[in-house]
Length: 316
Image 1 (tube, rainbow, N blue to C red):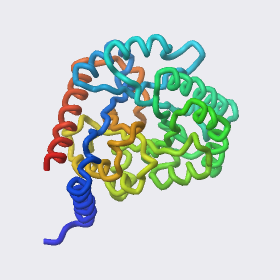
Image 2 (image 1 turned 45 degrees about the vertical axis):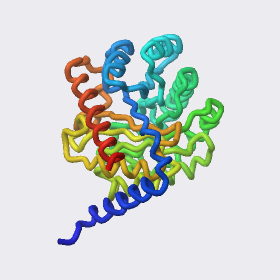
Image 3 (image 1 turned 90 degrees about the horizontal axis):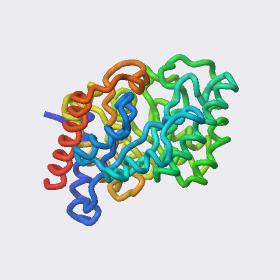
Image 4 (image 1 turned 120 degrees about the vertical axis):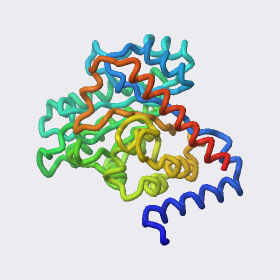
């Protein structure tokens, strides 16, 4: 029986993975850097979150970009003291872009709010040692377009603050999001076009999310291969946006594709689970009441399953 189209692509990635493993085994000495995005923990304290990550052997955290105003969000001392005491480093800052701080808005007041938000949270990243800052070109939770100038306004807005990222030595990472949640920039190709339009050294990377990629990309593994040198973080969740291993995601092909592009050898590249559950707008979760037992299940089962699959492939 002939292989299906996606299986043919899977086999090409597997073949390349095995060739590199055989001919250049030194490229596989380092493991993928496994992080966790904490905004999905809701109103849980950073102390409790750090304890959970340490419990399950997770050494990196993607911090919620929660500096929404001058008096809000993590302080340098709070974050560094808590995380340092648990042996956890900051992988990046998860920028949160809603209709209230939308780079593409047709309201100049809202766009200015987005610029100020970026400056505050890039400062947080610089003070905590973050490698990247996640940028969404248009508001999450707003799938309907304002007009046909959103792309241009968003690019114009980000250009204004892009040098802030350069000065902080933090990678600006554009995240494509499925069309059910945002009005534009849905695929890696869209993110590449956006990066080219911004044309700034501070904005040269992509933040992928496999849940969005399941809908928008023709093949997740192939999209990863074609993003070599651009991808700096990959949000993870299974097909039901739950813990890894709880759905039908082809995790093995994703892991192999990451090793093929040398992702494990990039000090600024991370795999970061973000199992938020299905729905059109996940942002309300950031202010939800934490359920420690549920969060323990999500983190524990995801970390365990990912590591099992990674080791299975590397010992193949």
